[in-house]
Image (tube, rainbow, N blue to C red; front, side, top):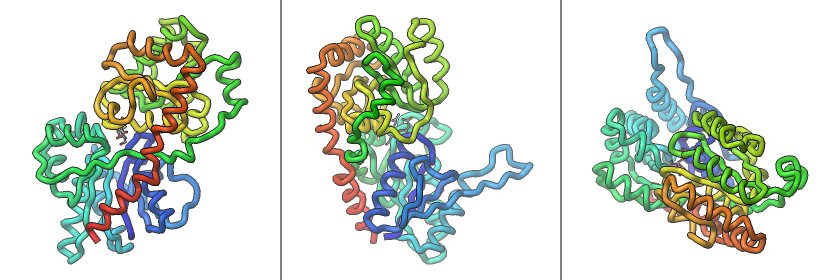
Length: 372
Ligand code: GMT
């Protein structure tokens, strides 16, 4: 098949998922064309069967806001026509689903039918999408898609609650390449972070408000009162300085490393003992799944779709949003006893296998085949 994939090229979960999907499809022999404004971060190195088309958005003195959506729709038309694509798969509804609708209408006039599949990822529905500035366009363009998928049952339900959706939404879970995340820890790296054998806690996100990174710092400060530990913050974003200020206030700043945006998550996760995800909402929590695949148990909130991937008391523990005391207790329960920790690590890795890339890619292929 010749497949167009449209996504955000950044470190966000939807872009990561879309890129990994495209790479896997290319490995299966499909021709995959990425259409976005920048090379996706996980699209590194040369890969046969993968093509990348950058959306150029020319500036003009009249434009205070250059019209990206128009440029994207025009690029979609151009790429679909010149590469004779069979279908377009857009990730994150805003503005990808509406740009795809526009491209579809233009091509229809020229006698070409291009099926559009929209995958909903989370905040495109639950936060940004439902804002009345965007809602009518989001609802309309989702309904105009030939197929809709959501990354969890929770997101599917939230979408039906938020919008009047006239079609079925198929749930296709996020996935992880288990083999890639099964890494031996790099000893030298572990020694740099935790020279005296301290336990390593980790959080990775885009540091937006919804992630509640202050709770991560608070949990870490509680853990530090009882056991020697270090905290690794991976990623960057608007709440980073708030987290840093709080760490200083709580006297744990020297025990925390902010390592910024990282591509090689598998190497970083390999040295971690516990992953913290304190979000107010996660449609799925791909970061938590990657942690589990690397054999790292997860302490998280019970928000959104997290309940669908974390098994309480087996692969980690969940607590209510903001319940720092419970999350700290849960973290200590796992970390205090090496035998208990080992059990959680093994089960996390084992449970992650059901979301292995090899189980999920065929579901997308099956969906695509319906439109050929
Ligand atoms: O979590 C973010 O803020 C990034 C966001 C995105 O769209 O890139 O992630 C969403 O999509 C991921 C992949 O499907 C999910 O695993 C995340 O849970 C979801 N984030 C939220 O729902 C907040």
